[in-house]
Image (cartoon, rainbow, N blue to C red; front, side, top):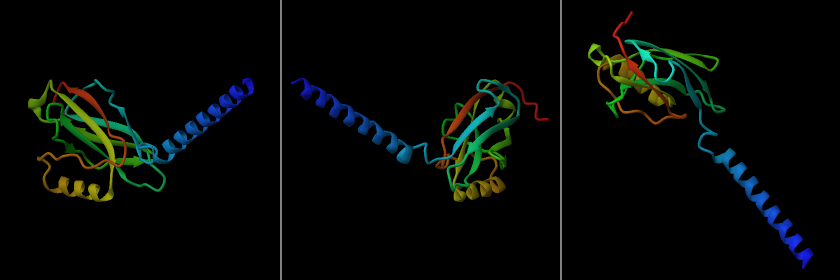
Length: 161
């Protein structure tokens, strides 16, 4: 009886370890973030006060074999589905930066969201075409090829210098 319980305990322990190992391997191979680019926004800080022009900086860690580009979008927080893509990103060794624009003079004292993500080459080309033609119209966000990161800032002036 004692040996039987010891054996059951060992078998149970082996089964548990096998299950945990399989879950670990599955998360590496099939995990949503494991095979995607990772984007961060390091500046401005979430909750910052901003003017018309906002210097946005961050990092990107690309998944192996992936060269998708970072894109930054801005919108007034109450414009839930309407976003404006910003200028082309300057990317160097995983660091990126862009000058973003927070609305018009009438948007002072409103909250804005600044979002960053990587997008496919096809979507990137579409965004480049958009910026050359229709700068005033908003768009819906393309499908990200990375995590989608966003911060909220408050526009407190329209100093665009």
